[in-house]
Every structure is written in C-alpha cells, then in structure tokens.
Image (cartoon, rainbow, N blue to C red):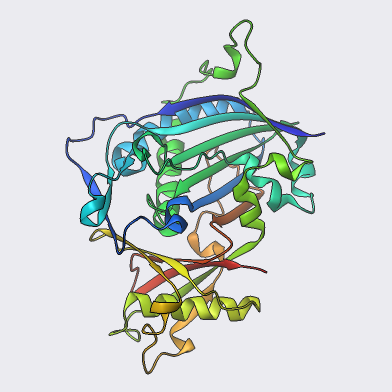
Amino acid sequence: MAQVHIEAIQSAIPRSIVEPGRSRRIAVAATPMPPGALKSRLRVIFYYNKVAEEESAWTVAAWIKESIGNALAEQPELAGRLRRGGEADGYWEVKFNDAGVRLVQATAEMTVSEFLALEDREAKEDALAYWVDIDKENPHFSALFYIQVTKFKGDGYSIGISCSVLLADLLFLSNFLKFWAQVHTQMLTQGQLSKNPIFHLSKFQRPNHPKYLKSISLDSATTIATAVAAATASATTIFKVNQTQAQGMSFEAIALLCLKEATKKLGVKMTSKFSLVINDESREMQVGSYGDDNNTGLQSPGMSNSLIVAEQWSELGVEELTLVQGNKPIHVSYNVMSSADEGFVVIMAPRKGQLMVSVTVAKE
C-alpha cells in the first residue's frame, strides 16, 4: 500500500517581535461559536517538478523555514492563536503573537504524476496538507496555519497549505501567499537563503524512536482524516457581487442569495442551515449561524441573480506561485474543508467595488 509518511514537524515564527496587545476580534452572533466556522479551513496544494540543480523538496522546505519568518513579520496575525476569553460577551479573538506557523516534512511512496493521475485524488489530498482540528476548550494551544512539504519519488514535491477560516479567507490567504513568494524569491536571488541548508529535521532521528511521526495509507479511506470525507461530499463555488447594485442589502441576504445560486448550480437541495463568516478587514470579523427559523427574514424585494457572477478559482491569482525561479506549479488544488451537513458561506473584504463570496454546500 502506498503511504505518506510525516517525518518532522517544526515551527516558524515572525522575524520581528509582535507589539504587545495586538489582536483582532471575532464577533459571534450567538454563542457558542458555530462548529461550522470553528472546524472549517482553507486548503491549497501546489505540485512541482524539479527544474534547478540545487532544488529538492528538503532544500525548499529549509528555504521556507527561512523566508516565511520575514513574510510573517508583515502579517503577524497568521502566526497568532485563537482566544475565547470574551465568549461571554459575544466575541473571540485572534491574538497576534510569536507562536508561529507549523512546518511539516513528509514523503510519499509514489511520483507526482502517479498521484495526480489517481481517480480519487481529491479524496487523498488531505495527506498532503497537515491539519489538527482546533481544540474548542483550549484554542490557544492550536496552530491555525500549516505548511507541508511532501517529497515524492523522483524529482517532484508538493507544498500544502492549511489555514483556519477564522484566521484568513481565500482572498486574504492568496494575497499573503503571493507576498510570501515575492519575499522568498527576492531572498533567494540576493543570496540570503542558505546554499546548503542543513535544517532538515528528518535527518535528526533519535535512537530507539519510530522513524516516522505518522504514516497515512493512500489506499484506505479510513486512515485519512475525517475532513476528507466532508471535502469529497461538498463543493465550493466562488461568486463576485457588485457592491453598488447590492447597496442596501444586508450581508446575510447576500449570503443567502449566493447559497441559493450555488445549490441551483450544483443541482442539489437547498440546505436548511448554514454558517456565515464576514471578513471585512477594516473591522472585526463576524460569525453567525442560520437555520430554518431565521432564514425566512433574509430575502428582500428586488434581489436578483444578476447581482452575482460565478468565478473560477484562478481569480485568486496563485496559479503561478513560484518559489524557485522558472518553476511554476504543474497543478494547483483548492478546497474549502467544511462540514458536509450544512452550508458554509464566507463574505470577503471588498475589492474594486466588488465583494467576493465563497459558498460550500453538500454535493449529495
């Protein structure tokens, strides 16, 4: 049976100290925090083939260790942790600190081309993007951002990103990834990254300890994280909404319109409940949960499907994420990992007079 072996896990922290007291509030419409928001995450996987002599999965992993710290210095919230101290007052918060992101090194017992050719590839991709569910009772111990570098047989490798939706939405994450790629390539061009990096934790094996931290069988669905089942049973659609035409509509009404359009597009039954995350970067994030009893009041006169336009994942602009000069991904996989038994909607910060909305619903 082909497997993916987790060989090492480490942390990368911002290169500069975060000023004390910085945080971002998450307003929760009705406590407790909706499970759909707490458990949902973004997953992006980039696949590469080696093109440069010095390039290898482990070299790229070591370079990432060095460059991500510089990028996090500009976006310290991505290295932060959740706190629920204000839950009684209707809010959680992301505390900006130096806890860092998790870096994972793994190996796969097949080539990149063999993996990409799998008919059920999407059901197995979670093995390439490490994730541990947030501990609801003690969320400050849970990492919210993971980067996994997986070495395949031959010269191929992948970079898998997992990020909590309470930390970033698709638009914010894509902008950060593009910024990080610029920082990384600049450091590489200017010789600021180690030519012969030695920080490969997988080389430092302790005697009488297992060689791998964890092994995941790619031939057995039961060994893959529970979230994979949800991912293969759900689909995410991205919409753009013209803010001028939608003026006067509540975010909840926009979310419901997009949700109805997504279910229509997929040819599935309208969900009876959904979680909503509103991520306007100019103010606190808002999280709410809606069901049969409170959906009825969301639709308003004049709402029209002409307000929204379905978009492609390529709109996020990370299809050509380059960490090594001249090496673009041979494939990019996107997913919003969420519960398949309810809808999940994220309204993102306005851009050029438009809102971007992601809708995840069960495929049935």
